[in-house]
Image 1 (tube, one colour):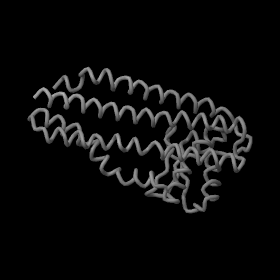
Image 2 (cartoon, helix red, strand yellow; image 1 turned 90 degrees about the vertical axis):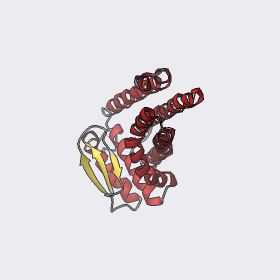
Image 3 (cartoon, rainbow, N blue to C red; image 1 turned 90 degrees about the horizontal axis):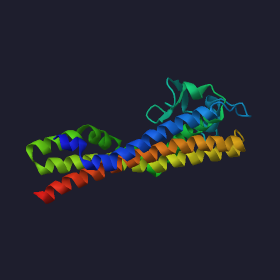
Image 4 (cartoon, helix red, strand yellow; image 1 turned 180 degrees about the vertical axis):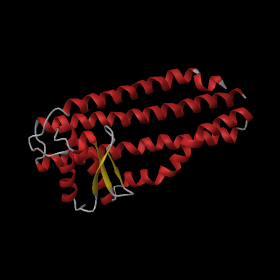
Length: 232
């Protein structure tokens, strides 16, 4: 049982991916903090930029709310609300405007029926089940030596990797929409636009890292339990 948590595959596959994920988190924080000090020439705050972008896309019904925390920004399709963090809502910085525009990109994706975001929303219930039951099922199957339980645990775990895979085009598309809008409207230009792009690119790296962690975890499980079956 102890070997399940600390086998060689864990150290070879999972730990390096987790280190990349930690680096990505530090990278997005440092990049955001850097460009939070750069005031945009347009003077737009994050909230003002978001309102302008939503209105330009005919999304007057989407509300904008402040949410506590740092980089807790998100679009909630259930409530039809773009929530901007304390560090974005009132800030006229290049970083804040970029993040606000990115979240509006998600609102636009839902409005136009962008397929990857529809797919991601559809698999969320299954992913939630997988995140809660996959490891318990694996452990129970390991203890009682019931292979179908182990296989079911691996299958449920794979849904989390699938979710991370589908998330990548959703996030990159939202960033591309954001940068194109900021450029075409003149909210940001030149070096400002490049700074915003660096912030969004750093954020995208966190999603790449999350996918890598999920894939390495899945590969580890397949190698670990595939090896057990061969040994049997």
